[in-house]
Length: 237
Image (cartoon, rainbow, N blue to C red):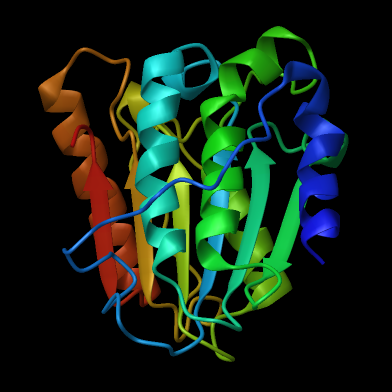
């Protein structure tokens, strides 16, 4: 099983030398965004990596490493039978976002091991983009991504948290947030039972605390109307 997990990520990153080595030692006493770190209740984590050109994740190695570390801390404290799913997004084009990583945590896919591999993957995003293995994209279809993953997985079977490594600047047919548009009303039927929406990097790269605040306000209100129990939008940490 461990070989299958590593093989999935190797398809994207092996030639860059991003994998290998021992799993990171994860020591964290605080409560994670997904709940009590001591709980063994299975949870589902869906991670969306925003490859749009406005997002520093694609060209800032230090920022990508920080995001990877933050998300790895969450995965390391999940219980067995929890699910971890990773997808890329940006333009509304399946061929531009074909990367998929899916694993169920178990004794053969332990949380600390999976956390270490996911951290390396996310930290390596700038290199993957620079090498052409992942394509930087012109649009930012965050709402379409949320629509697709909730239709694919739903939130009813187990507590589900969606984590976006994104600047939060929706730039699509729905809204252009940097231009001053507001987010449209969500379809509450899609998000019924969803636990949390998390955005790491909201407003990053804009250099504007006012724009960051407006983006956070827009997404927090959208998440509340959609039915998410919790929202967290961090520019820095």
